[in-house]
Image (cartoon, rainbow, N blue to C red):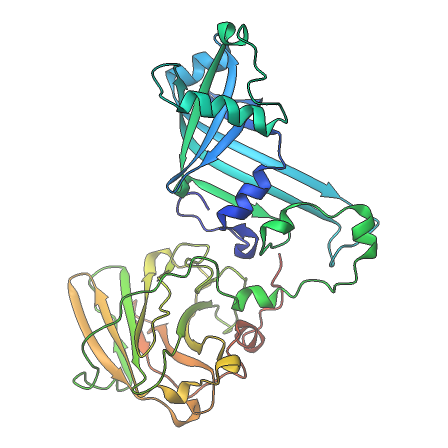
Length: 400
């Protein structure tokens, strides 16, 4: 994603920069979008590129004068699109008849002046030559008389990439040949896998130093203070004497019938925000022993169909690691709303022992405009993977 709107199909988003590099290496043309008043002005151009720790650098060359030069001189903010597509309608490959790769970026364009840009001007020229299959120094001296070289600097926060079919390795960026498609014996992709696999960018949240024993137990329901629409719920747990128990919190928006309407009406480790932007997961705790994960809920942004919000706690890769929720010896929630803050301890149901996923609580409307938090009701799921929750709450279409 670029900005705050999450990609609708999170599993199609490419985070790995080596995969992004592999995609760019196969594309010869970038479409540059420039501000031209009422309509954007989009022009295809050859390019070269360079990747640094904090940005993607796209190098362009063109004549010293022209409409696009006038436009980006007046407003240097530009948008870039790189794309490639393959179509094989008569031959399915792992269940699909087409595929694409794309990279989009926003950045600032500036001219690289020889003898003022240091070594970057030379690197830019060589990057353009190399990317387009030319020999080093294949530009003749007269080229420099009528040509300017530019760089578009794109911070990684302003770069996004995706593919129709999910990719895990840079080697998968190249499309298979028709012969490889027809010889393929792999089954169609299991999209349930992508809801349970953690993305490349695992970021541990900080643990907490204080225990939960001093917190009062949650009895009945806990009204959300009327101190603003943004509610922050910090789920805390501890597993004394156990290894680094990797637990995850997921939040699901349920409709009036208690069902999950759409695959993007949820926030979890692979999709930090739901489509409406009402629910946001702040980081994935991978530390263990004393862990916490925080969910924010903007009650005013919830979609009209929202009947309640279900919070599920699960143990990541529980089957492989031999862990279960019975290893948790204390569980609690800290609630922040406006300037108010309070915490409570949740009683861990006996039904959690031996289970790898369970309902950790719910936010429900009380009927008078007040929302309240309810603790675990003993409900568990057959598997730690998200597919078990989907099955329980009626979500059938995972790829849409």
